Amino acid sequence: MISPRHPSLPEPDAQAREHSARVVASVRTGIGQEGGWISFARYMQRVLYTPGLGYYVAGAAKFGRGGDFVTAPETTPLFAQALAVQVAAILAATAKREIVEFGAGSGILAADVLNALARHDALPSRYAVVEVSPELRERQQAVIAKNAPEHIARVAWLDALPATIDGAVVMNEVLDAIPPHILARKNSEWFERGIAAGETLRWDDRPLQDAALRELAAERFPEAGDYVSEINPAAEALVEDVGRRITKGAMLVLDYGFPQAEYYHAQRNEGTLMGHYRHHAHADPFLWPGLSDLTAHVDFTAMALAGERAGMQVAGYAPQAAFLLGCGILDRLRECGDPTSVAYLREAAAVHRLTSPAEMGELFKVLALAKCEDIKWPGFAVTDRSHRL
Image (cartoon, rainbow, N blue to C red):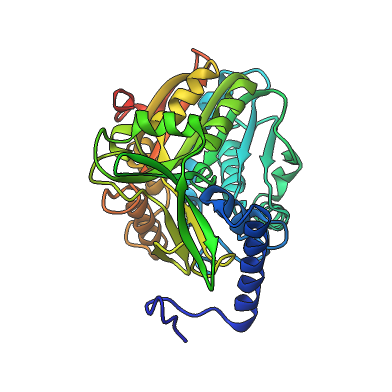
């Protein structure tokens, strides 16, 4: 079956449609409790994170070929092996030598990083995972136990942020899933884009009441003309909060996004909101709530400034391709054996996807924020675009 609204997408089965209907009912309840309207940020929070219902916490497969999208760690273990080169350099400059990963996805990145660090005798004292989803936590435990059984004793799952961090923080595709506010300037007046409910869920713009949001939008949006885009103070607050907890070490943010001048370009006047369903990208936030992921691109300038407010310094900013090349991903590829073998060709295709400007190599970026002057930065040896932030 196919959806009449989205003829290119497969229709969910009956059980999945029933689940989505429960999510919509929860959204409608929330809208009613808040007087007939909720901000988009509240809507995204509900459809992604409501316990037992939200996309990330309800048990359906998200990552890999059987889910809705494939992240870099699922593409090839060579991604984690390259990332581990930079992580090892951060750990070498710290005393406690711990790793804290936020939103660890399937768990395969943790397993592959631990295996890579072990080969270089650079294991962390602890690998802490901050994960809000009970279902994903269980999956991560199983994946790490299967793929890195000798290292799972080093892994701890945390319900809250650690008070202090001495080591490396990894945020791989985390900030794009933090709900942003969507603001609109129309005829020189400011509105916040939210959700109302009639026969169906629908967009509804209301006059913007939040002075802090208005100030951020006025600073970042183009000077004139109608414009719609996201502002994400929650993501900025997370980076600042984590940055303050780092006593020594660095934070690596890997995600898709732009520096501020590109994010709020005059021609990008409808924002960056995207949905992901069954390996299809779409622009409909009301497509099967609870079954479809929602994300917005990362404003890397805002994240860099948040880190600086926490006493950190920008250590580097580069496209994913340059970062991985600097960390030796081609060396790891050569270790895969005979260039004519099936195994080598499979990994070579994955590396191409990670580094090609036409795929993940240019859209995905790596931002490093450091609170230590002794760290070596192989990831930014090829190029560093910090000046563009």
